[in-house]
Image (cartoon, rainbow over all chains, first blue to last red):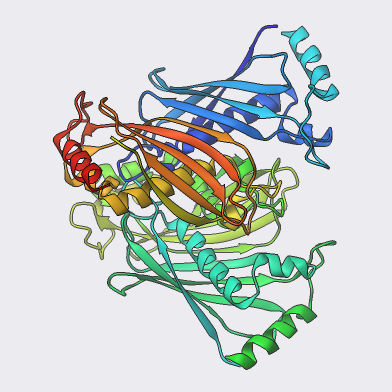
Length: 141
Length: 141
Length: 141
Length: 141
């Protein structure tokens, strides 16, 4: 199975830059989420889609490597890439680029697991909703 | 009925200061909440106390006047003052002081209303839980 | 002189909604800023434009009235309206609408003053850059 | 050289919990910073201490593993551990515990590098200020 990537543009907000004039490192986690949300909206796997199917998909791992800095006034491109896996997990990789120069600013990843939304039980096998999603989305790409 | 005031100290976080080196104005709304929470913890009227009594108490109005600025490295004192009123509302006034100099940095207020947590219906009369709270707390002060 | 309005659309981010499922009231101050920034980008009066002209324009007053709530999954329209005034101040009024239903969700205002960026001195008269801006922008509208 | 650990307690803020009632994963990066700041305050190596010595110390890498969730009303303990290294880097490891139960909630790390604050040049050798700091602090422990 191949991976799928969605690109989305985000403007740096004034309040996201710190006293050194650069975006505070913690906000990149939000940019990752902006990318993941844009992906979810396009491919029908947002938090709300999971929720309607009885699932919550909390983040269990995040990492980010910072290469360059972003400043107030900059725009950035988040590339969120879903790579299917056999494990009962959702893994995204992210690349953040400076929109004007295309320079790589940061990269990272997140891992999510599946919980039953009613009893918070971890799902050890990929739930039917997401197996279906994988078939439907992957066959189209 | 008199008013009651709770003072609480908060450190400015690095990520709360903006590229000009001063705390972004939107974060003061959070400092107000820090003050209101310290009040609620001390006097038994936090969001959780209301919730246990079937109520949610959303903010319907906020205002803030900024007099001085705060910088990373500063600590501030939030003074949250509850003034009882006959209307079915909770009104707090806030004064934020620079902890080191005691200078007034900002002042403002919030207004909250009472909603039934199950049907989101606005309560036109002050709910029994809060009438009791007023009697209990005000008689002690 | 007439007022000018810029409308901009913003998606509610997952992390902006609180445990009650609704957007935390403090985030509206950020939506106001999103509206003011969209205005500044369109009409050449963003923070960076002021800065290049030797000025910073801190917020000295903000207020917000909340009418309805916003939820994760919602989009909102911020309408930022600049109304010229004789005083050395910048006043914006904001209306936030639910994008899907057009219902008014909140309204408020901000007031900014002009400081010399080098010595932080308050400018008691409207600085030449902004007088020019007013002439240029207002004559076009 | 041994490692040094500072423990600090943080209350979960209402606005840090998401619509599922649990703290949004991005806020843990802020808790890490709260721990690092408490460390810096105690041992004289906060952002301001570096700055006074001509240095900025941006984060170049962060990772976090989430084990349990935190809810509004909870308090947490952040343990920030500095482990000296020969490389021109500052590495902290973090453990976040639920304050009431002592359960491990999350763990992670950050890596910072040294830049000259004036020309943003990466320092390939540990700068004298920090070499001195290591000697002074480590000999005491």
